[in-house]
Amino acid sequence: MRGNFSYHNPTKLYFGEDSLNFLKDELKNFGPVVLLNYGSGSAKRNGIYDQVISILKDAGKTVIENPGVMSNPTLEKLNEGVRIAREHKVDLILALGGGSVCDYSKAVSASAYFEGDYWDKFWIRQEQPAAEQRLLPVACVLTMAGTGSEMNAGTVITDAAHHFKAGHVFDSRLMPRFSILNPRFTMTVPENQMKSGIYDIMNHIMEQYFSDFDDNTSDYIAEGLMRSLIYSSRIAVKNPQDYDARSNIMWTATWALNTLIAMGKKEDWMVHMIGHSLGAWTHAPHGFTLASVSMAYYRRAMKNGLPKFVRFAKNVWNISGEGLTDEQIAEEGLEALKDWMLEIGLPLTISELGATAEMIPGITETTVIYPAGYLNLTKADVAEILKESL
Ligand code: NZQ
Ligand code: ZN
Image 1 (cartoon, helix red, strand yellow):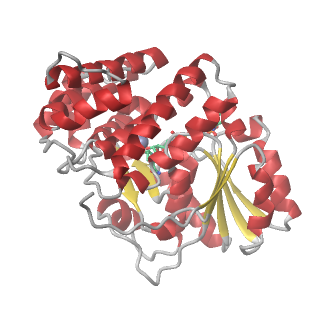
Image 2 (cartoon, protein in one colour; image 1 turned 90 degrees about the vertical axis):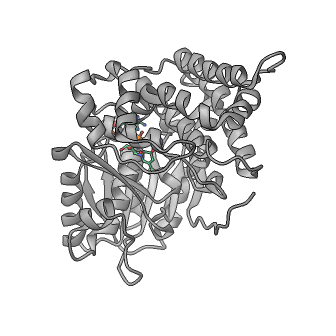
C-alpha cells in the first residue's frame, strides 16, 4: 500500500428499518429553519414525506419546501434553491430522495453564501469554498441506493442548455452531517432505477479498483463489496421486496463511494466522465449510461492493466484460470461481468438509451478527460469507445 493519504469522514449514519426514529434527536443540533428538498412526487406517493414532515413539525421547525428536484439536477434548479436558501435564512438543508436530491442539497449549501458565480468556481474551475465561507449543514433521508451521495461530498449538476454535466467533489465540510438509510424506503424505487443504482455501485467500485498494481488493502475491501453486490443484485432483480438483498445493496452503495476504498489509489473515473456526458445528451438514468459504455472501455483498459483484470476474474468472478493464459483469464472475467449485466437487465449499448451516431461528436466534445486508471484517453479514443458501444 504505497499512497500517502489522510482519511476523514464526518457523516453519521443511521441504518435500518427504525432509522427515521433518530431524525427527531438529530434536529436538536440545528437552528429553527429547515429547507426540505425533495423530488418529483415519489416521497409523497409512498408516505415518506408525511413521516418526515410530521417529525419536523413536532420538533418545532419552520419548514421551507423545495419540491421538484429532478433526476440529474440542473443548474437552473440550483439557482432556484440558492435563492430560497438566502431568502429564508435556512439553518439546515434536509434532502429527502435519491442521489440527485442529496447532491443538489450539497450544491445549494456550497453556493448559498458564495458571492459570485458559483457554477464557474465550483463546477468549472473545480475550486473549494474558502475556509471562511459559510456552508449550510446538509443531512439526507435517502430513498434510493446507488450514488453514495449520503456519505460523500460529491455533487453532480447539469447545465442543460450546454449539454454539460459536471461533477465536483467538495472537501469534507460538505459531507452530510447525518444520513438516514432505511432499506424499506427503497422498495418502491422503479425497477429500472433499482438496476441503474446497482450498476452505479458496481462501477464506483471498479473505477477505484482498476488503477495501480501494488498490493493494497483497499482492493481487498473492493472485492468483498463487489461479491456482496453481485450476490444481492441477483436476488433483488427476482424479488425486489427481499429485505436482506435490498439492505445489503444499500449498505454496499454507501461503502462503494464514501472515499474508503479510494485510499492509496490513483483511481480511474473515465467511465463516469463518458457516462456523464452521455447522460447530458440522453437524460438516461445515470447507472445505465455507465453500463452502456463499460464493455468497450474495459476491453481497452485490460490491455494495460492485465494483472488487475486477472485478479478481478479470479477474486470477483471465481474463474479458476486453469490451463488459460493471463489474457484468456482476464477476458473470461470481462465476459462474466457482461453476463451478469445481461442477467440483471442492464443496457449494453448507447442506442438503447436513445443515443445516435450523429450525437457522438457532441457527446465526445462535452466529455471531460484526464489521465485515468490504466489509460490516457484522447478525444478520438472517446469517440471510438462511443462508436463501439452503439
Ligand atoms: O423525483 P422522485 O419522484 O423522487 O423520483 C426519483 C427519480 O425519478 C425516483 N425515486 C427515488 N427514490 C424513490 C423513487 N421512486 C420511488 N420510490 C423511491 N423510494 O428515482 C428516480 C431517480 O432518482 P435519482 O436521485 O436521480 O437517482 P440516483 O440516486 O441514481 O442519483 C443520480 C444522480 O446522482 C449523480 C448522478 O450523476 C445523477 O445526477 N451522482 C452522484 C454521485 C456522488 N454524489 O458521489 C456519484 C455518482 O457517480 C453520480 O454521478
Ligand atoms: Zn456513479
